[in-house]
Amino acid sequence: MYTTFLVLALLGGLGVHFWWQLRYGRLARQLASERRVLAESHKQQEDAAAQKQAEQQALFNSMIEGVLILDGTGHVQLVNQALRDFFGLQTDVRQQTIMEALRLRQLNELVHRLPAERIVQGLEIQLPGVNGKWLEVNAAAVLDRAGTQRGAILVFHDLTRIKQLENTRQEFVANVSHELRTPLSLIKGFTETLLDGAKDDPAVAVQFLRTIEKHSDRLTYLIEDLLTISQLEGGRVAMSLHPVELPEEVAGVIGDLQTRADQKSVTLRNEIPAGLRAQADAERLQQVLFNLIENAIKYGRTEGTVVIGSRLVGGERVEIWVRDDGPGIPAEARERIFERFFRVDRARSREAGGTGLGLSIVKHIVQAHGGEVAVRGEVGQGTTFAFTLPTVPSAEPDPV
Ligand code: ADP
Image (cartoon, rainbow, N blue to C red):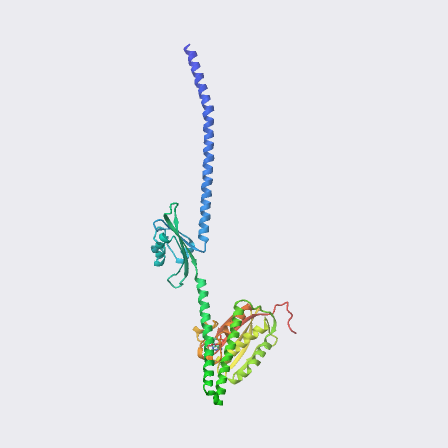
């Protein structure tokens, strides 16, 4: 009896065990598998979040605008790479105040205006230091649903290039006005003197009229040069490139300037070898040669010599140079000589009827040919202006 009970209890226990295993073992496996699926999806979500964050970070750092984010207590939370570059930040500025991080009173004031104004746009600041970068700052308060300020975002836009262009434009307008005003006031002055009675003395009248004529010519040259510069700078002049015979072009320009050279007893020597050609716009090339040879006569020595020569540079370029034996150009002026309106001796240039634009035109034309222009020579040892032009492509037949 006791044994039967024991066997029954054992069987019962085994039954319960198998039932338990069957029911809860499957459940446990199911649970474990679900846990695995959950862990996997959690990891995928984490990866996706990390990926998204990396993308946002890359976007943030690749922006050309500088961005700075402040938290609710006015401390820097985040800055992007452009902002670090603008301000030359070498260290981590997070958790610093804007004054500690960027050391600019104007920005500090801007941040303090935000609680009241919410958005501040178009503040222009110039950074201290040698590069003097100009930045435009737009700032906005970050608000929560209740309208309480929780931080601020400042966006910085680099205005330096625009400011430089604006300065150049203003300087150009000021220079042009000055250049126009000078001959105009002289013309007006001499005309008034003539009308006031000088006209009655024929010798004086002729002298004054000649001066008026000279200054009217200067005005004409100035306007012509200004138009040329504006066309060249606007890229509106298409160079019509053809093979040109260099010795002939130089001879033509020498012919045009011979009288001017004779007036100063200057000898003009064309040393370009016969048959040398370049691929150039003949009319524009003449303008370059005219400006350089005219300058060499104007600023060179009385009874001096001007030589026009050439050499081949590396098979694909020909260099043409105009050399005088005049006073030369000081080194510091040589660096600026191709700038518009730059003159070494302002009075002398004006007296000679110069516009201050000749070399600038030369530079533009040469560059439009894909060439380069340079000035050489020491003070007291004359000046050499040299420029390069492309040689005639081999497909073009050479003259026999
Ligand atoms: P400009 O109309 O005054 O001649 P350019 O642009 O042709 O204007 O020349 C600029 C300045 O460069 C001149 O005013 C002159 O001072 C200087 N310059 C040009 N060529 C020579 C030269 N061959 N020798 C000395 N100075 C020169």
